[in-house]
Image (cartoon, rainbow, N blue to C red; front, top):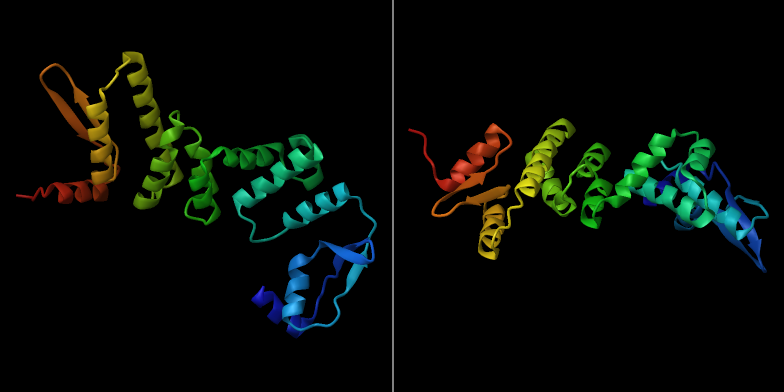
Length: 235
């Protein structure tokens, strides 16, 4: 807002705001940020276009205007699409035609809203790309999405690396399902403890009187990190 206010001080308001009459006052339909910036710049008058609009039309125009913002994040875009669908009964096909977008573009954005809230925040603040978000939805065990999202950030994994990692995770889920392995509570607790300690996926595989611990790594740097934790020195 401060930057916009400074621009308004120097150049004035180039594009009028849009308002509608409501009783004895006027309600802003489009241009809320411009109006607030103008007040910050101490302008006494703001150019405005008055239009007659129903509540439904006002909502549609306001959401569509918001979609024109250059700094819109993929999550904000998805939420705007979802609002139009829920509040105005638009279909994805309607949106695609009205906005000049492809239907897959609309669908792929809306799918991001299926991510857990903590992961949506990571996409929203730019810690994860939209490509990462879409790829994470391919994970069979949805409860592990936050864990994998943090791994992507921690190890700077690109989308291709994430795709390969998810293939491993999904094949692991399939193997475990087919074997119908039911680990006891003690083993599950120790796995959780080890995952937190090493910052990666750890599996304890137990048979009658023996077993093994598998610690996953995803790059040479990741291996070095784990070896450092284990205090393994090169000869």
